[in-house]
Length: 240
Image (cartoon, rainbow, N blue to C red):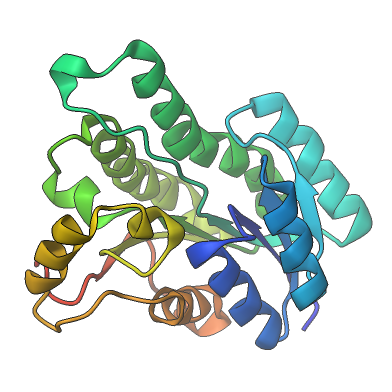
């Protein structure tokens, strides 16, 4: 397959699973990471997927990074906005730095990456943008006002860009994963995690494959009639 897929936060967790699934489906895949050089190098050695390093919270870095990807691999046809961080605290103890870091990385990056990829997609008359939101962006979560706000913002962004882009054969959709077996979730204290799993009707955490299969579906030509949608993948924990 000649199409190029770019995955942010693509060297660990859900992003790594998504990148590998796209590669196995025949896409030419590139991934972006920011700071964990060891994890990125291990991912590249294991998968042979090209890895690029820039801060997705920085608009100019995204512009230059996408230019580099397009120069070395090809025009970006599929963009998966997956990068995300947490800086948890209840609001009356949350610092401006905790708020800004999460908003800029989790929501700002979706603008930065999409804005720098969308013009090429419009010129070529094809594009697939898949934004990774979260169940907590739909229902909220104690101690995550910053994270929930960013992930909820992604849903409004997705709908607006979908409306703007539909006539150009560009679809824009969101996936809202529930709690998945990632490093981020692994950092949750065991007693809290046990309660979370007990509240998931299917009785387990999600995994990378659960989310990657949705991305593959939305990236496919056959999904051209689906845009502006949010796909919940949370084991029944939250039903919109």
